[in-house]
Length: 122
Image (tube, rainbow, N blue to C red):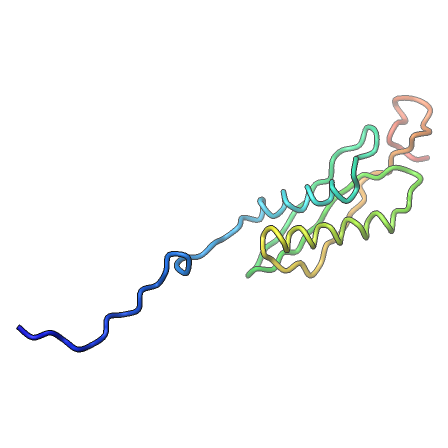
């Protein structure tokens, strides 16, 4: 019996095998939570932020829908949401975020007169 002198193939460590795929809906949950963190609290009677995400090869494109209090600095709040969402998705999912589109669904005024008018700016 002869022993072959060829070297055995390299052993691949378990951590180096396979692939990880994070579903779009998981990244959307991360983005929505990050938007909540950036806004600190939804306005009275307002809904929490909602996000939709499209992921393609480790790149996430995010759209976040928010409701804001009125009057407020809309630009500053949207900028804070963009920064926080991009940072959290990058940190938690390891994805690049080239764009975060913020859509303002509604402005809520603390000065509305009746319950029927609450949430509508006239």
